[in-house]
Image (cartoon, rainbow, N blue to C red; front, side, top):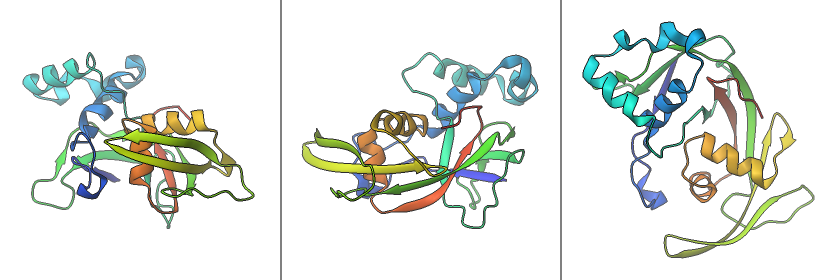
Length: 191
């Protein structure tokens, strides 16, 4: 099934870097995989030599790998074992599959609440306090549950980095409203 990825952050997020670099971050995750298991997927013949050389060089840069994605999936279409087609420009004439087809390793439920406001309630809240980013002062809390389990602040930071965000602050700016969805994994990691 197709997983479409944006190449630029929404203008409303006012990110320091407008590009997501998801293509490169996903390739970094694929290059980290066990080559014995995935050699059929990652064989250089899949790509023209010039593109393979460019993608191979991304492994040596500072971009951390994007190893999963968070999606709305109300009908629970995503399941373990499904094919993942990594695509940019989905549903356009410029649609481009930028990576080989990989199997979905697992799917987890995710709930994000208390984003973009400071709220104390009966539930445990991962509190980050006051942060200055991009010239603005923010006070915020994130309440993140995966498969019903509350994540602590260190786990929320790990989740945000693994999902391709440069910081937990960027993760917070993206999820400005309560969110229920699914975490789609193409690596063995689970929370």
